[in-house]
Amino acid sequence: MEEQFPMIQWIDEKGNLVQEMDQELITEDVIRNMYRNMVRIRTFDRKAISLQRQGRIGTYAPFEGQEAAQVGSAMSLRKTDWLFPTYRDHGATMTFGHSLKTILTYWNGRNEGCVPPEGLHIFPPSVPIATHLPHAAGAAYAEKRKGTDNIAVAYFGDGATSEGDFHEGLNVASVLKSPVVFFNQNNNYAISVPIHKQMNSKTIAQKSVSYDIPGVRVDGNDIIAVYTEMNRAIDRARNGEGPTLIEAVTWRYGAHTTADDPTKYREQQESEDRRASKDPVARLELYMKQAGIWDEEWVTGIKEEVAQEIDLAIEDMENIPPADVNVIFDYVFESPTWTIEKQKKDYVAHMERGDQ
Image (cartoon, rainbow, N blue to C red; front, side, top):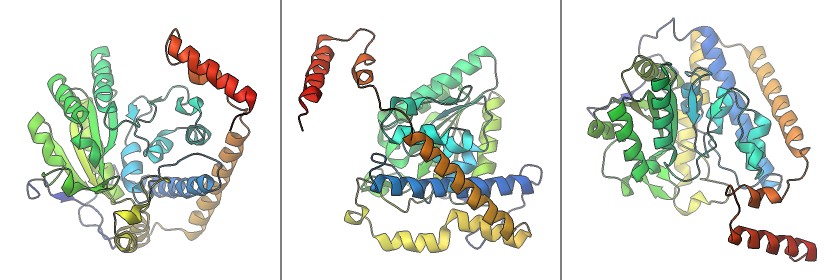
């Protein structure tokens, strides 16, 4: 199956172009925008980990190492499309236009953090694994019924392919020819479980065969490859040809979340080796230097710019008034059940007593 679904690559680990690039699709401005977005989301990711360690936000899910997959895919979308993220795809939502303040608010445990900017179709991050894939198929089908050419993209990890929702989502999208792209980021681990222990398939892309839809396996650390294949899948969807499954093979350097210790189940030297040889940001930098479009002054400027943007978003997040505790209880059901009412009463009494 690895021969039937070969790894598609446009730029190798040394920054060399290994296929002829579509110059109309991949312009110098697009490449600069790719680099800026990857620097931006990596800076955000590192800052968020620091905030969690300081107790300024809650448990956080890092994504460093997956920047090419998230930026390359999200840059391919139109603002009228739909984006269905997991808890680890805030790099994609940032690229798509989500508010940094709102994303930080989400990681600070606030309901407001699930609300996208006006006009953007971004679903709340899916914490239950794969449950949003059928939703994405349904939203895409609704756009088809409306007569638009808007599409949906659903992000998910390798662990999600072991869930029933993955198969249900692909099946219904295949039957209805929903204009949806199922974008898998295969970072080789579902929390502590390596991929070879959760599936016998040699690739994730080959799972497309069961549903008679195209399956593509791409180097997820090569942003040019991700962007090119994502655009092809989106064009198919917009033209009424139905869904595509993309497997972007990548690697997350850090922990599953800040509550996790990856040293318990993963050899950390492999992460360091991959950072040294396959890093997505460094790879694009090498290509830009070889292509003569690298500008040190410009790079320094964007690093300063994104750092200031992130610091301002943090300040805005921390200036939000304290949460109304009633929200936790009052919006679970249309009319609170007696159990919810009792929980609310007990909690209010607990707070009034100052119990620890």
